[in-house]
Amino acid sequence: MKTVDIIVPCYNEEEVLETFYETTESVVSSMEGYQFTYILVDDGSRDSTLSRMKGLAAAHKNVRWLSFSRNFGKEAAMYAGLSHSSGDLVIVMDADLQHPPAMIPVMMKGIEEGYDCAAARRTTRAGESRLRSAFSNLFYRVSNRMTNVKMPQDAVDFRIMTRQMVDSILKLSEVERFSKGIFAWVGYDTKWYPYENVERTLGSTKWSFRSLLKYAVSGITSFSITPLRIVSGLGFLISSVAFIYIIVTLIQTLIFGIAVPGYVTTLCAVLFLGGIIELSVGILGEYIAHIYMEAKDRPIYIIKQSNLDSHTSDKKGDK
Ligand code: UDP
Ligand code: MG
Image 1 (cartoon, rainbow, N blue to C red):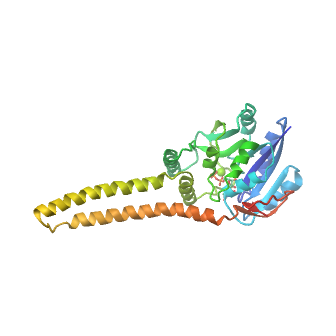
Image 2 (cartoon, rainbow, N blue to C red):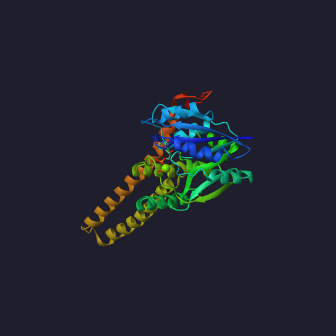
Image 3 (cartoon, rainbow, N blue to C red):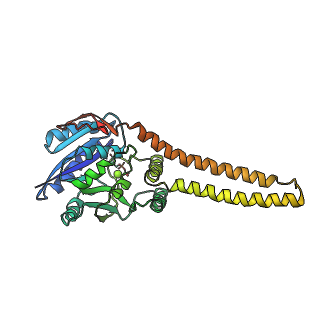
């Protein structure tokens, strides 16, 4: 008998939590040879999510829950769930039923075949705005060019992983987390399962366009230093061109004397260089911000209450 922990990050999911449990339970309870435990992580919800979790735990003995002191974000919620899991296998999935529970038995076959990870991949993006899809495409194109870690586009945070892989993920304890990159970075053999996007029927998406953009920038700077290289490359290129231009101008001046007009050239050079410098400082700033956040070494999450037997307290998250 193998134990499986199902980790579910939940932020304001009161409408869907019970339906999620019933739907998932109806699928997994018929799977033989596995024993499932739910670890529901309340990410500082402001609705009745927590009391519904408590209700579920009172009614079903395979439900554990833990609740943050405020909203720390989905990444922190997943990390908390992973650090409190002890199963032989771990599943991470969303509460909103956009990750079809019916795929669990199918994906489990991949693990039985010997893969370390079985992960879902969306084949369609139905129900998503054009703009969001376009930005998402751009992000994956840029980030996969810039990093050695190849993130498959349309991978979602719905996976089954072995204990060994989970332990490796827990070792990457950075505060600013980007799971898609982390999953890819740790390696291991992953089997991909395509599925058609399911639209959210209950509740609403918790991501704004702005939060996604921030997440994308942090995703690139967490896994790649290519932007820094581009800055140095640009600096080198511009200096070389400037050097040649200086020589040419000097020679011209020596031969023909000082020609006063030069207004346009000066203005263009000043503005162009000013822009490049601003951009470079901005890119440097992104990295310094990362160093700053990591150097503070704050916990990734803070648990206010939970029904777990032990609150393992490591320095990365505590109770
Ligand atoms: N979520 C979370 N904390 C947050 C935002 C989201 O735990 O700050 C959870 C949310 O409850 C859901 C999952 O992350 O279970 C995915 O969120 P959502 O469905 O809003 O994202 P989308 O499917 O639109 O990408
Ligand atoms: Mg969703």
